[in-house]
Every structure is written in C-alpha cells, then in structure tokens.
Length: 265
Length: 235
Image (cartoon, rainbow over the protein chains, first blue to last red):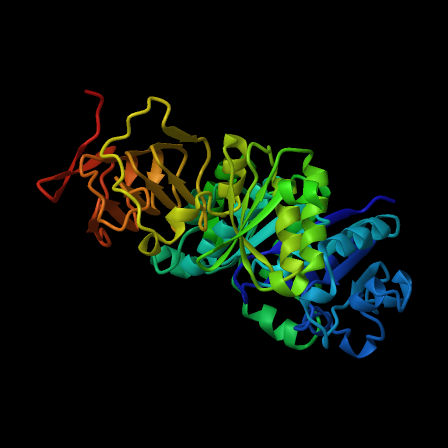
C-alpha cells in the first residue's frame, strides 16, 4: 500500500474542517478504502468527539512521536466501519510537542498501512498548521462564503504556494443558496474568482450536520443529508472519479455555472 | 574560532540583532550559525533577528528550514538581506523584510530619497497573484502580472502597474525610508480593475471604500495634491 496524504486547512477557525475530515474519512472508508484520520489540533482536540470515539482513546499522537507506544496502538478503529481509524491529538500538550519532521516520519510510516491519511489542521498559520501540511501530498483548503474566511483562505493558499506545496483544491462549505440568491452571501463564483484555485466540492448548508456532529455520528453516514452527499462526492473526486456536481432542483442554475467553471458536466 | 568569527558577524541593532554571513557553502554556514547560537542560547533567545546572507542563493526550503530552526530557539527571523535577487524574492514570498532600515522608518534618519527612479532596470516584475499577507517593497517601479488580493500590500518608490485586479493596498512614490513625507508626487498607479482597499501616492492617502468600480483600466496620479483618475490607455 502507498497511502495518499491529504490535509484540510482553512486559516480561520470554525469553518468546518473537522466535520469535513470526519465526513471524508467515513465516505472513503465506506467505499472499502482503508483510512486513518489524524487530529492535528494538539491541545484542542475535537475530531474524536465528532467521530464518536472519545471514550476509546488510550494513546495519542504525542505518545507515538515520543515513543511511548507503537503506531498501531494509537490507531483507534471505528466501530461502524472496519477500515476507518483515528489517531487522536493529545489534549494536555501543545503544538510544540510535535515537529514538522515528526509528522513526515509518521506519514511515511502510515503510507505502508493504509490507503488514505487525512490530516485535520488546526486553525491559524503557526506551528500546528506547519505540522499538518508538512507530510501532505495534497492540500484541500476549506472555506465558507464569508469575506473573513475567504481572506484567511487566500493567505493560507499564498503560504502553501510559497512553501512549494503545489496548488491546493478548494472545498466551499456551508453555502446557503437562498442567501446567495438574495445577494446576502458571497456566491461560489465570487469566491472562486478571488481565490483562483481548483474546486473540489461545494457543500450546502445543512442543519443536520450539527445535529449529527453532536451525536458523534458524522454527516456522511446520513444518506438523506445533502451535505453528506456533497462529502461523498468529494471523496469520489479524491479517488479520481469524475463525479458530477449535485444537480439539486432549486440550485440548477448555480450548479450549472459551477460545472462550467470547473470544466465538469 | 577566528575563521568562525570572520564568517559570522553579529551586531546589535536598535531592537534586535543583525548577523552577517560570509561567503561559503550554505550548509556549512548554517551549521556554524547554529553552533554560535547554541553556545550562547540565553543571549539569543527571544531576539529579533535580521540576517545578511550576502550573495547566497537561498530557496524557499532553505529559508523556511532556517526560520523554523530559529523559531524552535524562540528567535524570530524578520528580515533577510541579500544582494542576490533570487534570495530577495524568496524572502519576500515568505513575507520577510528585505531591507533593514525600511522596516522602522521613524527610527532611521536617512537622506531624502532620490526624487525619481533613475536606473533603467529598477523595475520589479512579479509574475503571480499577490495573495493576502504578501508584502512587496521595492526601491523602483513594480509591475504585477496578476491580481493584488485584499490583504496584500505593494510599496514602491516609483510607479505601480497591476496587469490584473487591484483589490489590496498600494503605495506608490513611497520614500525609501526617510522620516520626511515622500516627495515622489509624480508617481502613478495603474490597474486593469481598480478597487484597492487603500491607495497612497507619496504622502496622499485615498480611501476608496464604497467608490464604484470602473470596468475600464484606470490610471491614478496626483494633480496639485488631488487624486486624478483617468482611463488608462497607451499614449
């Protein structure tokens, strides 16, 4: 096996990185892929809660790096999906406990074990962010259609380009079509126009995301949810499939334009 | 020790340190540098550091590596000075200052900058979009082939020409570090789409918030101290 290492980052906090990681992990694992999700937010861990695995943590990423346990011991297997694992962050340490080169070593070790390594970057552009992007083969920048979130995404993209990480792809999260129509929210066109990077998915705003997260059962497990479907589509695109953008009745015009923008039909 | 001393010179600045490196292999210099730092860690820790690397060609990996190793020792690298254009560009990409005096103009008394940019090759070409957090500073003219996004800054002693959308902050005719207000009032700013967050020529500041945007390329200059905007076409 030789895993692909994918990091999701955003600059700004609270835009939905952790939910996206959990959802993509589940979407990939339910297609039979072996996936490990890493929580990069040492000191403020969340991914375990969103994935509903918090009470099963024994060892964490700092234990691996400092040699208190073997890699496999810190990989918590999900009960619902046998191919899904979590490496939790330490809650009682800070970002300095791990260095970018530790992350690269960890990534290389995991490449042999699984198909996908998904890394949840903390907010900000400091050490935690640097740790999260160090081992990445591919970076996904996630943003909301809000000016402040887009501004931070732009900064992050600039840093990724400067660090020669290659051009990242964009996930636009929490798009409310009603508000876009009334011009109360930036449209996907506006965001793509400013950021000028490839789009890999648009996730509609969906109340069930929050409800699902609070129940420790990520949205991708919910077959009814539109956000869940959007994440499953992104997973398909990560694998390399040409998944058409959702053609939701009320959003026909918008999606058609997006399809045109990204050259998909 | 002698050879070390000649290769690595440490000098105090107003609120930080300037380390000048001599000629030589970068790997060796870096090793020597960290030897010196680690010998006197208590002296260096917490310092703001400017580094003069001479004609050394540094790539992004070198510089980020250096910055990370320094920050592990709680030393913050804020400037890299070099006479090698490639290195200067790398430093600018990473948002580091590339001149020391410019950074704190109020503290540095310098003779008034030349009124005009004389040298023919005093143009900095930037062939990419400047994203938020990027700052470009140049003694001559600046030409950007790409956009200047909100949160990016361009400061030039000469003119600024943006072949793209200007949505960030620009300052043309800026003084090269003197305390006096700049005198280069002949400088102008051009962009294909002109919607800057902040625009300054010499010492005149224009706040264009809320101004409607023109679909045509625009040239902005000063006429008797007033901002004057006209359609930009080749004349």
